Length: 577
Image 1 (cartoon, helix red, strand yellow):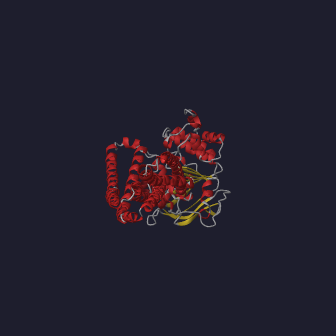
Image 2: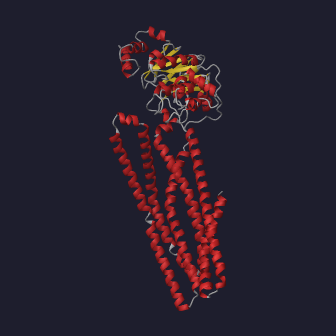
Image 3: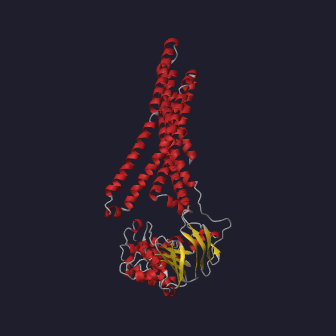
C-alpha cells in the first residue's frame, strides 16, 4: 500500500514539474515563434497532465486515508493489549477518563504524523525536487542564488520548534484532564445533582477550559510565526528573479520562454516550500503525541510471571496464607504477618472494620499485587510461581461494586466463561435469582444494559455479577460483600443460591453483616491488618470478651447492623478493659 501511495505521489510531483516545463514551449514555440501546428499537441499535453494529476490526487487521498486509519487501529489494539498487561497499581495512579482522553488524542496525533510525513514531506518534497530541477536546467546560476534564502528559514523554524515542544505537551495534558473531567461528571451525574455540585464543577471546568484555550492560543502564536518569515523571504526571492529576468531581456535579448519557465517553476515551488517550512510545526506536535504514547507502551508491567512459571493445578483447593505482609506503600503496612488456612471445599469468612485489609487479602489472592513478605499457597503451590492466567482462571470473583460492560445481559454473564452456552448462561442466572427480572426486560437476555448497567437497579446488577461468577465454574469462589446491594428478600434468595454454588468449592466470604457469615466453616477476624481471632461462630461466641462476640452484641443494637468503625472501636475498647 505504501508503494501505491508512492506512485501516486510521484505522479503528482511529475505533473507539477511538467506544468512549469511546458511554459517554455508555450511562450517560445507557440507565442514567440507562432508555431500554431503545436497547438493541438500542447493542449492535449495540458489536458493529459491535469487528468493524471486529478486521478493521482484522488488515489493518494484514499490510499493515505486507509494507511492512516490502519495505523490508528493497530495502535489502538496495541495500546489496549498493553494496558491489559499492566498491574492494578498503574490504574490506581491514573484516572480512567484522563487516560482514555490522552490515548485518544495521542493516537490521532500519530495518524497526523503519518499524514504529514507522506503528504507534506513526500509529495511536497518530490514536487519541490522536480521544480528545482526545472529551475536549474533553465538557469543554474539564478537557482543557486535562490537557494541562499533556505538557511535563514531553516534556522528560524528550528528556533520556534524548541519553544513549541514544551507548549504542545502542556496542551495535550490539559486537554486530557479536561475531557477526563467531563467524562467523570457525566458518569457521576446522579451524585452531581444530589449534592448540587453543578456550580462547583462548572467553576472547575471553566478553569480547565481557560487553561486549554490559553495553551491553544500560545501554540497558534508560536507556530504561525513561520508564515511571515517564509512570506518575507519568498517576496525577496521572487522580486529578485523578476528583476533579473527583466534585466536579461532588456540588455541581452534573452528569449522569454526560459525565463517564464523559471518563474513559473519558482512560483509553483513556493507553495510546497512554504508547506515544508510549516510541516515541522505539525511534526513537532505529532512527535510529542508519539512520545506520550510510547511512555505508556514502554512502561513495563511491574508484576509478571516469574521465569519458569507453571500453570496452577487445583486439586482439593486448600488456600494457605503464610505470614503475609503487604502495604500499598512500604512505610504504611496494610497487612502484617497474616496467617490462616481456608480449608478445601469449605467456606471461610473474613470480618473486620473498613480498612482492616479484608478486600486487600482478596486482591493479593488474585495476584493484583505482589506480597512484601510471606506466601500464599493453593494446594501447596506458591501463587508467586504460577502463571497469573492459570491462577485467575481458577477463581470466580464477585465484587462489592458490581461492574457491567457495554453489551447485553447475556454478554455480561458470559464474560465469566467465553465458551458458555446459552443454556449454561440461563442456568447461572436462575441460580443467582436473576432469571425472573431478566425475562421481564424488553428483550430478555439480549437487552442492552447501558453504561455500567445504568438501566438496572443495584440489586439486579449484583445478581448478574453473581451469575457471571457461577457460570465461570471455578474451584475457588471469592465473595467480597457479594450481597451488599440486595434487599432482604433478594438477599435471602441469593444466599440460598450461593449455598448451592459454594457446596464443594473453596469459598472466601467478606461481609460486614455478621448474620451472613454465621454458617461459615471458619471465621477470621481482622483488626488493623492483623488476625486477632479465628474459629467457628460457636467457638468465637464462647469467648464473651472476644472481638467477634463484641461485634455480634453491638450489631444486635438498633442502628448498628454493620461492622463499621464505630462498632470496631467499641469492641476494641471493651476488649482492653
